[in-house]
Length: 199
Image (cartoon, rainbow, N blue to C red; front, side):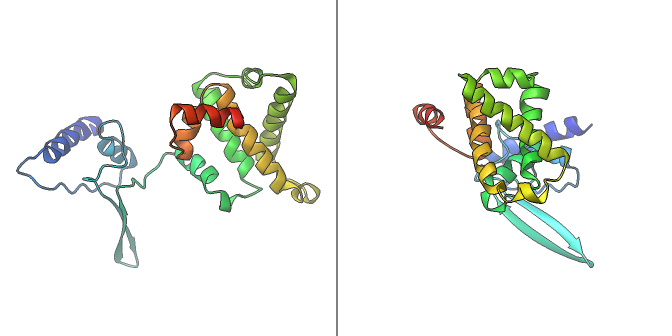
């Protein structure tokens, strides 16, 4: 039923944006799946200047409205993982390894059916493969246990090093476009290629 109703809603939205006698549609829902279906217009759910998003919250019998303009505030778990990587000032030595592990597992292992060895083999030489292997060990170790006090002191340097290797995983596997999209990097094909080589 959700998909039938969302298809009807999408048709109405298209008509309104195309110049219907109806000037505005207000759509309220508490269902995240319905929101995702209804807000996905023309291959995207963000950036249309005719669509605005709000979240209504109720606390102590008072409703507050939080505007998000054209940016859809509802994100999937996968998008939230990437947002954590984008917000570099909020890096946590405790959570960053788990975040990177979950992204690589979801994108390469679950969706792409890559094994760890498939990922490592994409790197061009033995030294780079060793660095990639160390990334995989680092994120697996850090996501399943808390680092001890001796390890924490060098954590910031390790994070920067492994973020660079994390990016190279996407570059050498020819998925840098996905990395750039999820990190919000907009560049031409030439710039993307140069950036990948420079990385």
